[in-house]
Length: 172
Image 1 (tube, rainbow, N blue to C red):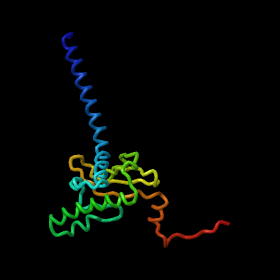
Image 2 (image 1 turned 60 degrees about the vertical axis):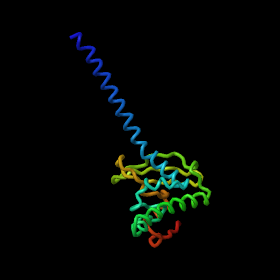
Image 3 (image 1 turned 45 degrees about the horizontal axis):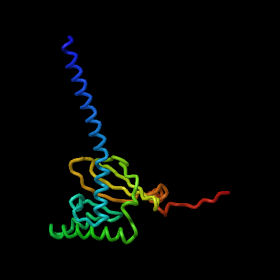
Image 4 (image 1 turned 180 degrees about the vertical axis):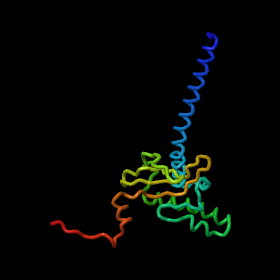
């Protein structure tokens, strides 16, 4: 029985290391989407065409524009490749022309997981806004497929109700 005690102690150490490794892996994977979105957004902002391979162009939506709808209409790979590079250049130029800076985005975080998607959020404190990024939940095939501004609660209610249904009430 005394001979089994060292083996049991080694088994305990091995199981502890495996558990710790698993926890570290899970924590790192939960941050993977955040780092991925930061990297893609930095590439877009800086006009780095290497970021093109990290975007799902067929279904990409960027700030109220269905980029994928235009992309899918292009007749061949040469034009699609040119469109990708041009989009990145124009995104970067537009971002800079409006005074945007990548370093202005803070509090990058995993906001939500729904319908096989991970939503990553980054706050833009000077504008009191939040930018949302959508990527697939599967970690082995990441492609950014949406960037959008998060609507405030007031704007969301207005958008859901619509201006034709809003009534004025008098307090009296």
